Image (cartoon, rainbow, N blue to C red):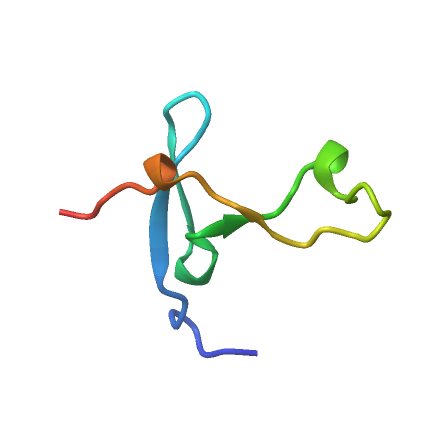
Length: 59
């Protein structure tokens, strides 16, 4: 368990344009949904690349 407040947060623009906060370690990738969880060979996919347009630049 980490100390309270140690998570660095980044902003991501969602599909409908809403901004959500995600941990900075997850800014460049996202967790796949149910339909994208498995590759064609049957291996489980843990990360998929996030669109660069989705990352909100902090001012």
